Picture 1 (cartoon, rainbow, N blue to C red):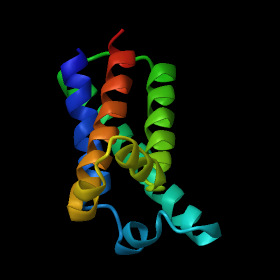
Picture 2 (cartoon, rainbow, N blue to C red):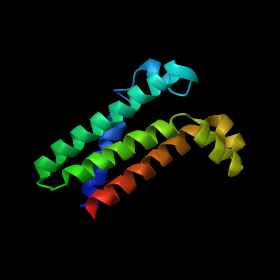
Picture 3 (cartoon, helix red, strand yellow):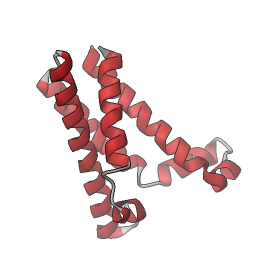
Length: 130
């Protein structure tokens, strides 16, 4: 069940991060202040909705049973961790500590960002599969 749930959540993540993310959200989700947080939290809410939709539709189509309270907790985890990671400073912090500043300067931050998101999805899928 872990693999099934993970793929469903990953599909929701891809939808929310690429076709459903607006240019405004992408450009401003790490900005300071109210407008930055608004863009960030709107994008995180898109993740909750997209992952909820793919999880519900996929689980129904595949006959997988997921506890509603556990699914809600997993979706809140996905949304909150996505918002945190997308503030961008956590990725910069990690890359500085890991001595990856040259890679960060040449596009590596996007890869570390996506890896962090995928890790949180895997943890959510693992929790739902237990």
